[in-house]
Image 1: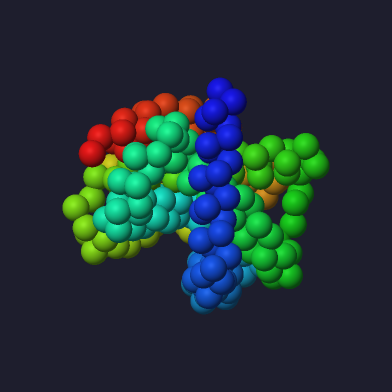
Image 2: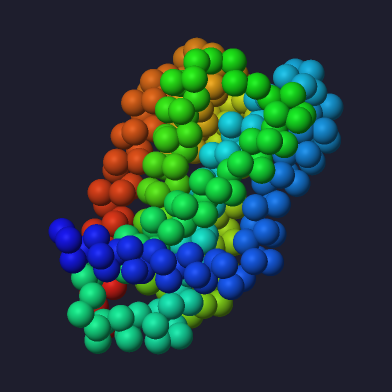
Length: 258
């Protein structure tokens, strides 16, 4: 365990230095959710039944979760780049724990995400979003958000290790933007057709979004929803545990293969 912790910290430090050496990309990545909040909140908000300020308060937790789900894309990009540029092959020749490489990448991404969430929260406060629940609930929401980001990053790392080229990883990663659209991150699912509502509510993003809205005190749990949304905190923890338990070992195993 000490070797894993030492090697994992070294791998995480490498990933953080990569982010530090590409500040433009990091800033662009963090500004995208803010731009989406302003666009969705003021353009789409005027077209929905709920008033603009109410919709923006509804939207902020959804955007937080959609940003966390972006861990699939970033994890895929970074793992594919290291794989096809020979970095992974160099690591395999070194006395480094197999689990340390994907785990270090996921932990470094978690640190960057935690820092990058602050601007979105500040802009959310500026446009009318508030924490209506308890402090403990808000801290639980942030912890759940980071846990979901970690789970999504492990999914992306495994997929990135499977890709045959960086271009393929870029195309596959870009398609992941559809996932928040098939959820309740941006709009309520109450009025969707039955089959589409079921699909959206079994999307992990819907469970985590509903959990954040409940913990922040922004919106009640919708009635008649599927189990993960009707029990959002339990459903979110179950999804995070399932994704991590499946894809982290797969990523470690795939990394160990030449």
